[in-house]
Image (cartoon, rainbow, N blue to C red; front, side):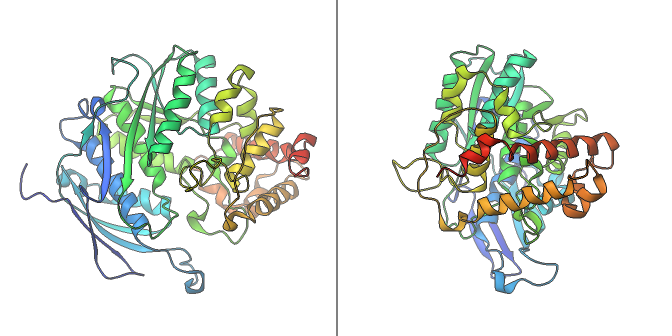
Length: 433
C-alpha cells in the first residue's frame, strides 16, 4: 500500500467549526460479507465506495443541523460540511470528488467538501448466504424488510420469472433478524429466491443528528457491491412511485426534509458512480415499482403471502425504538400511515399492532391529508402538468420529467394515489380509532 495509511476521519461544519475526529475502525462497524468482498475489483474501488458511504453516514449523524430559530433565507436546514475520507485508492477517487459531492449535496441538502486520504482495507465477515454459489444466475435486489420491498420481490419473482438474490443493510441486530426471518419465510415457498446477504453498519458514537439523509447512499452502495461481486450490471429495488418521489407534505418542508433515498435523481447519481467504479456504462439501477402506488403493489401479492406482509416493518422508528417487546410500528408516522392506507385500499385486513407514537409524529397524518387535498385541487379538472408543477415544484427534480411520456406517468400515478384516499375502506381505517 503506497504511503502512510490512516483510519482517522476529520470533519466539521459551518455550524460546528471545531474539528472533530472519528476512527473508521473503532467508531464505525462497516462490514462487507466475505463472499462479496472476495469477488470485488482488484483496484478496491467497490470496497472504497462502501467505506465512503459508511463514513459519510457517520459524519452526517455527527453534525447537527441548524435549529429552527437559526434558519436564514435560502439556507434552511443546510450545513457546509468538510471531511477527510480514507480509502484504498485515493488517487482514483480524488479525480471523482465532484461526483461524490454532487450525490451527497442532493441527498442531504448540504454542501460537502471532501478530501480523500490513503486508507486501509475494509473488514469482512462470514457470509450469511443461503446459497453456496455466489455466481448463480439471477438479478440482485435490495431488500429492506419493509412492505414495499416484500411486495416487490414477491411480484418480481412471479411475473418476471427471474431468479433473485437479495441484499440488505442492518444497523442493529433487531433489523438483521427481522430481514432474515422474512427472507427465510419467502425462500421456503419461492425457490427462485436464491440468496440473501446482509451488510452490517453501526456507528459507535453519539447520534447528534437523527435525520441522516445519507442513509440512502449506504443502502444503494450495498446493492451495487452485491451486483458487482456477482458479475452483473444491474440492481433492482421496489419503492412505490409516490414514496420514491416523496413530494413535500407542506410548503414548510424544504430541501431534503422530504427524504430522497430512492428518488429517481438519486438513482441516477448512484448509477453514474456505479458505472465509474465498474467501467461498465450499461450498469443500471431500476425501481421496478415506480409506476405503482403502495396499494397497487399490495394488490399484486397473493393472499398466501399475508404472513410475510404482516411481518414487514414500514415505520420510521421501527428498528430504533427502545421498547424491547413493543410493536415495531408507531402507527402515526408518515410511513405507518401510508402502510395503513395501502393495506386498506387493497382490501387486506392485516393487523399492524402499534405502540405509542413519538410526539413529533403526531401531526404527520394531518400533513398527509393536506398533501392529498392539494393533489385533489390540482387534478380537479383533469391531468394538467402546469398546475401540478405550480403546486408541487419539486416534481421537476425527476430527471425524466421533461419527457411528455414521463409527465403522463407522474400525473396518472398521483391521480390514482389521491383517489385511493377516497375509498370507503380507507376512510373507515382512519375514522374508527
